Amino acid sequence: MELNDNWTWLDLYNMAKKANEKQSPKCYAIPKTPEGYLFREVIFKDIDYYVDKNEKYAFDTKEFTDALKLLKRIMDEQIEHPDIDLRTVIKPDGEIELDDILFLPIQLFSYDNIVTYNVYFKSINILPVPKGLYTGAKEIWDDYIAINKSTSKKN
Amino acid sequence: MNEKKYTNTKVIVERYDELEYEQYLQRINTELMAGKGPDLIYSYFPFDEYQEKGMLLKLDDMINNDPEFDMTDYDQTIINVYRSKDGFYVMPVSYIVDSFLVNSTLV
Image 1: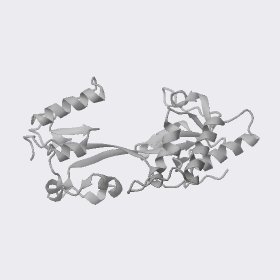
Image 2: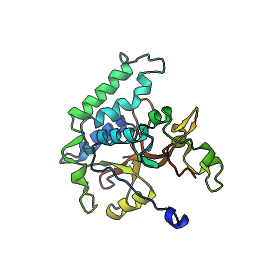
Image 3: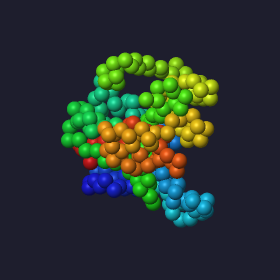
Image 4: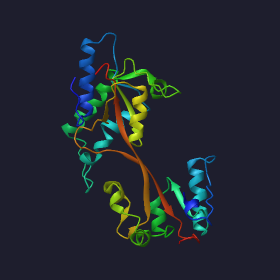
């Protein structure tokens, strides 16, 4: 299968389907994810496409129903593993056992993270999380710091 | 590092691990509203609300007058999220990127 860092959730779905044409027993695209994860990734990530700045909605469009249908297919056809979740895949000592799972959602803090994954996982490949169907929107989680205006140590 | 550079400075880290997020927010809110609280606030907090209420120190002058600090060293996409019309009050210090590890034995 050809990997592409510009991939979408539709590509991931198709990849899982293709893998299962030859694979026996069944393999899964991703581990079991927390409730709401798939909705956030497949639908909500493209919210800027469905709702514009003037609050005009596009929820009655073919694009939106196509996205919902894709989400339904992903859920109904067990693209994600029914039992094994992220905590099960990543062992307490950091070792990863993917077995019959094609992709593992991870969060990268730094390049050092990639090295760490490489210790436990041979032939490492890391891709950006798949895009929604219509935008390239990405979620970034960050920590931030500010100074209390009342501090006596401004200097 | 700060204590090594500024030898007369003692940094005290006050953690709020024992509090639920709502309790932590309430405590920080109360402290800041009373003109008290920690000198530095680090973690998740409603920075836009604090900025609007004048609880945070504007960083622009400090940044511009510090020859060791170069804003272009940082990811501008992330930095610009925190840049308001009024100035710069919050500094992002780390961020996480969602990614997918590929099982190369199957794919």
